[in-house]
Length: 399
Image: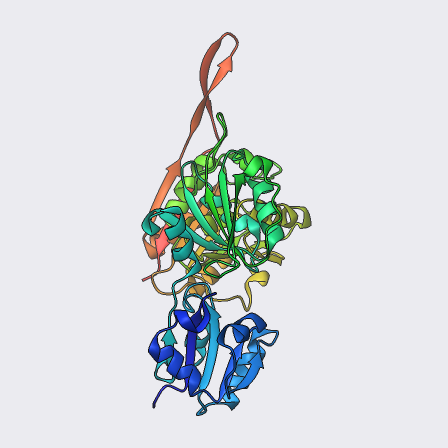
């Protein structure tokens, strides 16, 4: 089959910035899909114009009806970099599609700033929570951000200031690559520019002295979370996440998630990692949702209820953590639900739960460990060790 759906990246320079093959596809198109700005960039043509519908799924349905016609979709920059290309590639067969990438907004901005792409984090907060950039806010780190609108730049500046990164250098470039291109510069802590909606934001992250910067990995301090004292503490949590082994786009079940510390760190640790938290208490679900938002703008799916009943009909997980409500029945259900090579980790502090883990260790093998941490604590005028309650941890990979 010859490609009939042509996805063309276009910049502010319009047709002049396109390759010969891209211009030819536009000239021979029966239908051209794009936003108002995109249509304006290509001038007059004989094709029927279709404006971007909302929601996007409506466009996918329209395109199915146009199969076999010559259809062009106009997108800004590179259609396969935070754009429509991946949705189209997932919907249609690759042989039906032809992609024509343009230089991306990230590449254009980097070229203007002299930033090496391999040393820069490229992120989108277009239609996403601004808090998504928080794990990437590290001293001396460079970020390039696709924003939703001009106000988002001021909101990001305010957020950076609140995180102790008020000295970060911001450069917002609007209408980039066109005759109306304009550049705004300043520090996050005194940002006062009115930036047009179509912009790309560059952030050179600089922390104020004595700012506590949270690691992008796992093992965050306990006080980084809103909690009621009942949580998987930092030392045990770091070992737990190491056994769970977060991976890109993988799904975790956090059974008895409490304040969500394990689920949140799972999502922070790998690109696109997702989590479902099962928690019976309303107040703890509220804390978990708040922590997910504060520490990365993550969409933590929370299920009200207890295992095993609350586990019915959930999406198949890549890993499971049982931090509360452990029983032989819950373990067996979770182990059966895991994908092959999925990881299951259980933490127990009671003798009854420990007995369950000892039995499952005998059945499935894996690793059974006793975790015991003690922290130096003032005792009178001296210092001694204060031991935390020991935790029995069982971890196993499903073969």
